[in-house]
Each structure stands twice: as C-alpha cells, then as structure tokens.
Amino acid sequence: MRMILFEPDIAGNVGAVIRICACLGADLEIIEPCGFPLKSADLRRAAMDYGGAEEIIRHPSWDVFLANHETRDGRLLLMTTKGARAHSAIAYRPDDAILIGRESIGAPAALHEAADERLVIPMAAGARSLNMAVSAAIVLAEANRQFAQ
Image 1 (cartoon, rainbow, N blue to C red):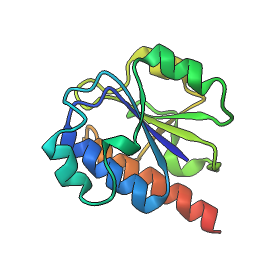
Image 2 (image 1 turned 120 degrees about the vertical axis):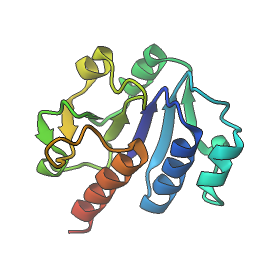
Image 3 (image 1 turned 30 degrees about the vertical axis):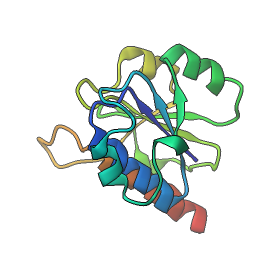
Image 4 (image 1 turned 60 degrees about the horizontal axis):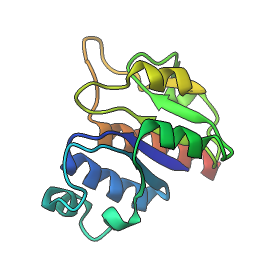
C-alpha cells in the first residue's frame, strides 16, 4: 500500500506517519510543497529510527503526482470528513493509494475529483476531524487487518 500526504503543514505529523508506514508496511509519498523543510528536527524526532526524508517518494506538485499515479495500478482512496463511505466498509487492495489532505485546509476539490473513493473514519457527534497521523494509522491498520484474514 501507499500512503500519500498532500502538502503537509506539520513536520511532527509527517515524522509520525513515517513511523506508522514503517511499522505497518506502507510506502510513503509526499506531494509538495510542504510547510517545513523535509530535513526538519521535528520530523526526525517523531520518526525516531524508523526512517527519514530520504525514504519518502516526493512529488513536486499535484499535477506531477497525478501523472505518476495514472501509470500505476490501484485506486486512489481519499480520507476526508466529507467521505461517502466508512473506511472499514471497503475491501482494501495491496495496490491502493491512501490520500490524506493538508492539516490546515483538508482536501481541496481537485483531490475529491481525482479520488476513486472518498472514505471517512466515523467519529462521535460534534467531532470535527482526527489528526492526519492518527487517520493514517487507523486506515493502514484496517487494511492490514483485512489482509491478515
């Protein structure tokens, strides 16, 4: 599986996602620009010894990412609070790419338009959203649970 972060704002979150991807067996890609340098101390601190910026596949823009994605197999699954289906209601595939929007603004319209599925993590009434690293962990854990069956 592939975890795709769209223009992330917070280095610590990306560091946590590096660690999550390493522990749950997913590749990590970032669509730039980022709101911080990828060599940030906060990123290294959160990632610990699980990897770093050198292991991330980087795309300089959304358009470049889309061109690269179209040459690969697999669905583009957008995690969004405006999702049409629960993250646990689909059958994940090893070639899926899970896309998470920017912390500050979420997923712009272009991401929604490109997605094969728009998925939501069910939350308590009144809750606005989960941290992007937490969302990444929840979705990758569900995919791994399905793969283990």
